[in-house]
Length: 151
Image 1 (cartoon, rainbow, N blue to C red):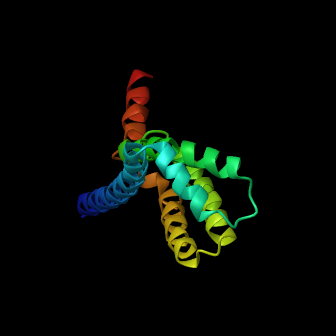
Image 2: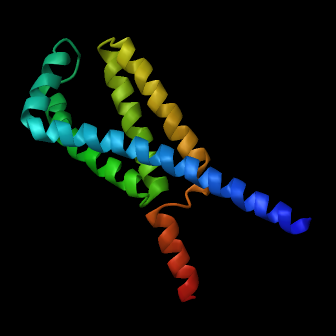
Image 3: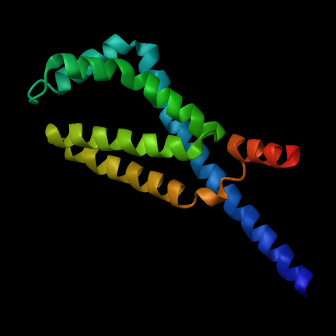
């Protein structure tokens, strides 16, 4: 009877790890593709579009342009790290901070639909960070298992 309980707990943990991995991978892929698609059109094109969207915002043009130039690379890097599960905790914190900055910008230009969507992203980052203990299918977990075996 005891073995059945252990087997059930192992299966449940496996399902939780699978669910976590799938959500982490989808979020990582989403973020990676945001960055890649913006890099493919050219960071300058994306930055110019952003400058236009923030034309009435009380921010200097250079700050919007600079942010637009680096945002695609940041998105691509964070997306790749999430996709493979490397430095997951730090990546989730960085992603949450990025969402804060994007929410600030959306609110500044009163783009409430975008701000609402960013709340959804913030919630997903929260869930991933809260359930980080289930990050078993990741480079982080693989490296931790390797370190334990080496000890």
